Image 1 (cartoon, one colour):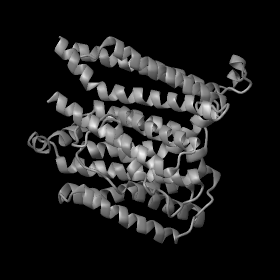
Image 2: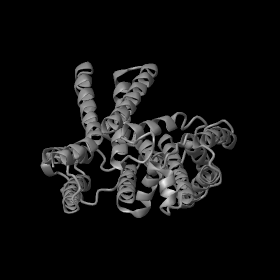
Image 3: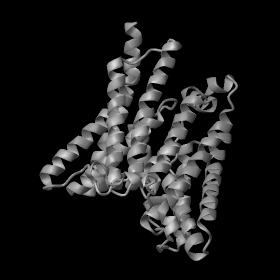
Length: 400
């Protein structure tokens, strides 16, 4: 029994460790900035909203990057693909006056085709993904310059901007004035409370299922500690957002995608097969898994999410820019590895990726407010990424 508990504790160490690291980093910036900048609140409603708006594209692309890395590959082209699709969308909206829904649909299809083009060579020709996507990064960076002609294209109509800068209307206006606040978005607050309750309910449900199937459980104190921290954080964030402008549209998109991908990776046969491919490609093929097709589909999926992120970036900036997306692939890959994915493939969780992305986002936001130069920011983020990978390797060696 003690061996099972130790195994469960070790298995959850990385995920819980990253969550604690996120809480510690937030607390650090809240204290330091409050001292350094008199009266500044790092956890103000406006700054929390900015964190979601500024890091939405990283989380969107990181969800797809996790599947690629879990399958044992890498995609270096996502930043360039996002920039290219964002530029193409700008031309369609601004210059050709296409309706926004049609632009969104076409952009997602183009992203999927780009992913298919790259995935074909990786899956069926066995060309290393590093080489294929490195070529894609150069090709689509050049294509972005060609499409935009080296200039910014914008501004966009409000309907397109709302993808990144819009907010969900308050569906519960009668709650305004409650809790002593004249302006309170009741819908945002209620959504946060419901989400926190669902986190605890799903956690208990999964724990009961593990107990029924004889799967080693994590210690009770650790389980309740993690879930209470997450639930309190959700209520706190929703309360802060309720005091500002409510729920950003892009936050709803991120939440829906996170839930869908978490369900796909943990509760579907196809999701488990992708993990099997990354764990042992030959064994997966011998067991009857269509390795080529699933590898191909992970790159198609990555292309679609990169296209969505490209439109979000363009809408956020209110223009498509030739230099948009430069270095984004590094932030996305870093978020995945910091969130617990293994470099050798076969392991990693969606929730861990979201936590990793927020760690990167909080660090970027906090260091920028502190006035730390971009040179030191890059060095610090590089060291954090290295520490996360070393931690992963150490854990694997420890587990034998």
